[in-house]
Length: 568
Image (cartoon, rainbow, N blue to C red):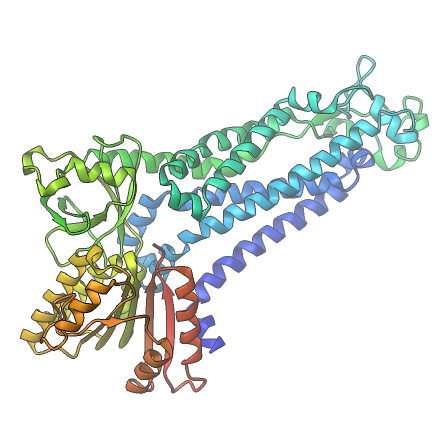
């Protein structure tokens, strides 16, 4: 079971291990360099190992800031996915899956930033303490450098009575360090799942202060607070000898007064490439924004669900992908993601938008869906579409048997998938590896997704006409109802079609027994690889994942369940 899980997640594990390995290598390499480098020997006399901790964490911070911008450039990823032969098959699917890598890298930035800040606070305290009366020997001698002409300072804190906080905030490094720390805290806190769900606009706007973060990061090192001995001074001043004979400075031939300078800032070298890439991505997005999107059909479904069918030049999609939509008449800045509900074989692409916030409410009204009075096509507001992005569900076609499990609004990604399965099934020249689809839908209020029940009814009718009713097996579970609904259901239970959905397959009431479902599927398909695709809440995701491991056979010739979760 563990072996099959490792095989299924091998590429994700490779990405994570590679990221951890590079971070560890950069940290250790930089730490050791600053611990051994002669030009920073005198700096280490004052600061100790805190210097190496500060610089090593800074390098790792720069590396992660370089990576954090890459998933944002989704248009380049979309272009590579569609055109480059290097991103086919599992690598193409993994490219989409590892957009989640963005969150992991953000945690890496936060950890390294915390280490960097802590080390610099320690450095500042050491600088301040070396100017006290208790300081003596080489530490005191180094701290007093710069008080006379023709000398450069090593210690930026010039007197013991200096207010270190004020002194720090008066420098470029201190001011920008405080700024990017506050920006990072703002972005991290506003990116939490609870805030994103409660106020997507708050997350959207605060996340774009990353521009301030990167500007501050590139000029943060320009203050050059941490200083080292200049290369010219190293040629004249024998550090290893003079460290132990500092009393002979200026008298010994090998010990002229050492000269110091700040290390050149390097953060811009790390982020320059991704920033240019991101700027190009914004240009591409602006170009896509200018492309005309033709709205061919607008449908208002029950429970305030708006269906938009659109056409756009050179638009290529795969099942399960999503697009970003902007409506200038609602907001010039906000782009919102929506899963495509049409199949690639159709001559249009569509989304189903349920009113669940201020933006969707305004969009619903802009299209005249309020009160079912839809506007004429010529008077519809303009839409801009960017994408498509993501392609995790295309793995469905790589298994002979699949289980598609949706909970609530998580049913949306499976609309395009089921349509695509139908089209491929009906194409005589297409040889499908997929031979059986089990579809499970757990919903509390079926009225909110009546449009999907209509889709299932259409698929059921078409497959019945083609004599392929065995291909799709669907199970709908209703978890919420009132007494009136229960009485109505009981009264019409004997009818040929389900009273709730109108389908031949009757709706189940309550939650599914996943042990029974997985046991039945495993018994029906021995010696098969079964793909399990889920979209829904995390609690149910853990249950489904546990079922996959529990019912996968230890025998390589037995049945194996491969779990894949769709972020939604």
